[in-house]
Image 1 (cartoon, rainbow, N blue to C red):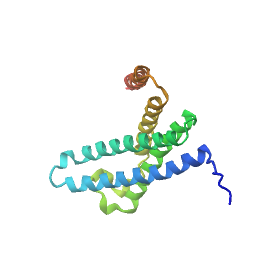
Image 2 (cartoon, rainbow, N blue to C red):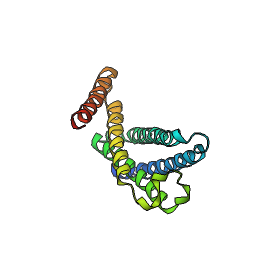
Image 3 (tube, rainbow, N blue to C red):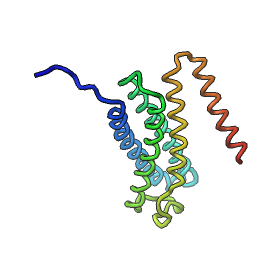
Image 4 (cartoon, helix red, strand yellow):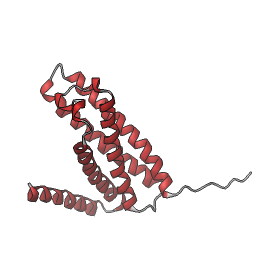
Length: 169
């Protein structure tokens, strides 16, 4: 028997991280939906806002952890592959969540999230954009060794987003 180890390619590593992170993200989004349903009786005015806050926190947690683990496995992986993986995790996780909502409408508490409205493309787009920004920030944090320049670049990214929103709003 040979003791040679088989090297995985970048895409194999990213594909496995993509599937695990998508599963965890969709499961977290579904748990946030159940949390909203439980909180609906005690504080209905804040239940939807709390669900979205939990979903955004889970999105940040899953994407940054997935990209950090991919970077630990393969140090010389290109940054654009990591950003593409973060974007795909966000899009696939929100798509699986929307499909779950369509298949199990009894879990929906909010009146605006009825199964009649169908698949919410806007939420996939929203989480995709947020996921891309989070993956960009994660790649900046991982690849730039200077804490000062890392913070400056992240500040510039966030300022650019604010200026973009201000200009088009």
